[in-house]
Image 1 (cartoon, rainbow, N blue to C red):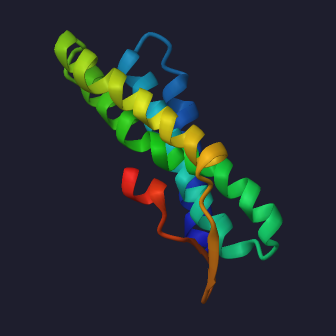
Image 2: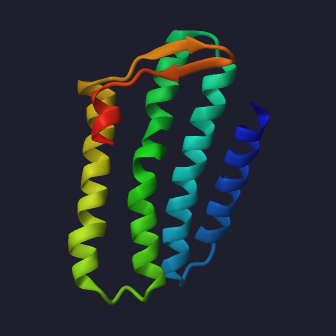
Length: 134
């Protein structure tokens, strides 16, 4: 589905534009968020166009990290947009969410790898342990 690829390209372009704003911490958080969204959109695109399951399996587990980091990056963006003043929000929400996202990503890549099943129009991940943990 070409709309996933277009969305991924736009997300990545917006991310690089946000990174060009050197003195704005909220722009850096926005860049992380749209890069995560772009990686997830790229995953959705790859699931619909790649037919070789061996190649797709590797690319799927790499681009899936974007999906796992979307909630964390939104928490980080929220913290930055509200002035970065709440150290409690940073300690209780932002840092643990990144830690959990990293654990889920590593677990999905190495311990509990998701499997893909063929469906009309491509592949979808099977419901597994990672699905429920996420």
